[in-house]
Amino acid sequence: MIDEHDARRLRCRRLGHEVAFRYCRTQEGDTVCPLVLDCWWEVFDVAGFLREHLEPEAFGTLARRGFRPKVASLLDLIEQARRSAETAPDADAPDGPRTS
Image 1 (cartoon, rainbow, N blue to C red):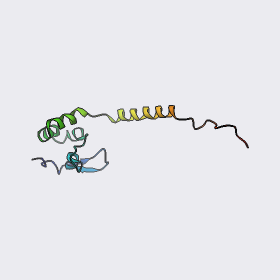
Image 2 (image 1 turned 135 degrees about the horizontal axis):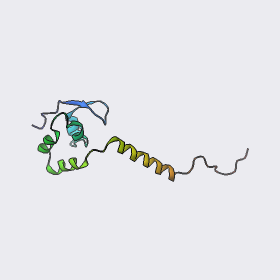
Image 3 (image 1 turned 45 degrees about the horizontal axis):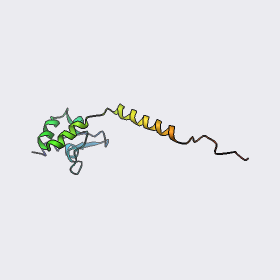
Image 4 (image 1 turned 120 degrees about the vertical axis):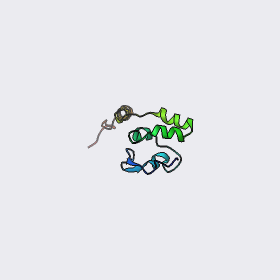
């Protein structure tokens, strides 16, 4: 039964509050949350459940996404900001001669 775990609840890292598994399974549409395997694996066999209920291609895509630790995401954001700062015009540079 596809909805057998829908009432289970836990805190969502993305939204910052408690959600039911139903939301993670559907995101109020037809899309499974990309973090569902990482969030729910300690609660029940979410991989087995999704493997049973999703098309093989959809489950494979979900499983291949994997989990990126928060630190890796933060390091990527820092690197992007650094590159952006290097290519941006210098805000402290004078625009021309000052007349006072």
